[in-house]
Length: 518
Image (cartoon, rainbow, N blue to C red; front, side, top):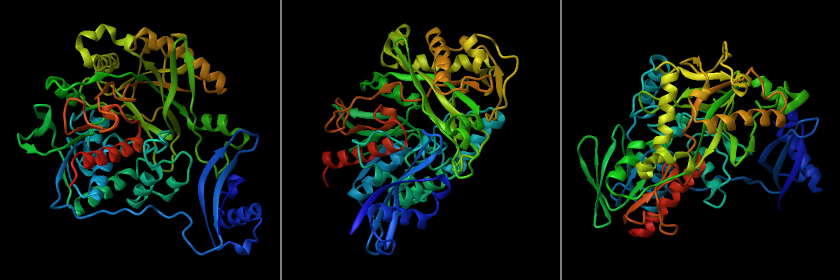
C-alpha cells in the first residue's frame, strides 16, 4: 500500500527524514512500524504566518520500494541513423538532441560558441578586460544562456510537456535530486556547467555530433523546402530537417532569416533594469522574526503591478546571487543575474522590467519584423555610451531614481566590471522611466522596506525574451513557409526559461520524427 500525505513542519525539522516519515504515518493513521519506505515528493516554504513553516508532500509505502523513481531513458546508439540538424546547444537544442537519440535519429548540432571550459576564458575577458567575444559569452556557447544562469527550473508551462521527465533527465546528468522536490527548484551556476558537460557526453557516446565554434551563416531553401546550411568555415551541410534553437540573443540568425525571405515577426518583450538589494533586507521582509534562521534558505520574491496600461514585474529573481554582463557584442550594455547552488552571496538581485508592446517601436516600423529587435539594441547601445563606453554599467540608487535625482554615490555591488552613477532616465524611453518609477513605490507598499536607497538599479535588463517570433504550424511545429524547418525554444518565441525550452526541444524532436518516419 502507498499513500501520499501533506504535512507541515518547522524549518529545523525539514532535514530530519525519520521525523518526517513518522509525522506522515501518524497523519495517515498508520503505525510508524508499518512504513517500510518513504520519500518527500514536494517541498515549499510558507512564510505567510508569524512563524515560517515548510509544507511537504510525503509518500509512504508499506513495502520496500523506491517511492519516487527516476523516469527511465532509452539512449540508443545512433551513429548510423538518419541525421537531423540542430542550430544551437542551449536547453532547447540539448533536449532536442537527447530526444532525437531516444527516437533513433542522429543529432548533428552546430553551436557558434565554445564548450564550457573554453567559454570560461571568454567570460573572464568580459568581466576583467571589458572585452566581448561576439561568438562566446554569457549567452552563446555550450548550454546557451542557461549554463551561466541561476539554473532556475520553475515553470508554469505544465501543458507543454512532462516537467518531471525534464527534471529527472537533469538529475541523471548530475543535478541535485532536490530539484525533483522543491517548489522553486534551481541547480546553481557553479554546478550547471558540469551537468551540461555530462549531457554533451551522453550525446557523443550515443553517436551524436556537436560542432563547437561553428556559426551558421546561411540556410538553403529550395521551393519552400529546407535543403542545407552553410557554416562560418564555408562548409555546406545537407540534411532533411533543421531544428532552429538559436536562443533569444542571436540577432544575426534573425537577420539571416529575414535576408533569405523566411517569414519572421515582431514580438512583445520586456525591458528595464536589474535591482540589487542586500540579501539580509529581503530575508527580513519575507521571513520576519525568523530571517536569521539557519535552516531557511535565502529568501526570494515575486512582484507585479499595473502602471496605467502596462505591466511592470520582477523577473528571474536570484537570491544570494550576482549581476553579470550579458552583452553579446561590443558597444552595448546588457545585464543578467545568477546564483550559485548555495545562494550564499551578500546580495539579492532581480530583473525589474516593463512590458514592451508594438506601439512602443512604431518609430522603427520601416525595419519590418526587425523593428522590436532594433528598439532593444538601441537602448543597450545608449547604456554603453552613457556609462563611459566600457562594460561599466549605468546605475542609480532606487529612491534617487524614483525621485529623478542622480546618485552622489552608489552602493556596493556584485557586478564585477563596476557601476557608473547615471541618470537612468537618459538611457530609457520616457514610458519605461515613468512606469519603473511608479512601480518602485508600488513594490515598496507590497514589501515594506523594499523601496530603499540601499538598493541599486543597474541597467539594462533587456534580454528577458526574444523580440522576434519565428512562425510555426501549431500541429506540425514546422515553419509555414519552409518544410523541414522547426523553430524551437526561446529564440523562436515559444518558451521562457530552461524547463519550458527543454520541453519545446523534445516536442520539436518528436515533430521531426512525425515529419520524417524512419
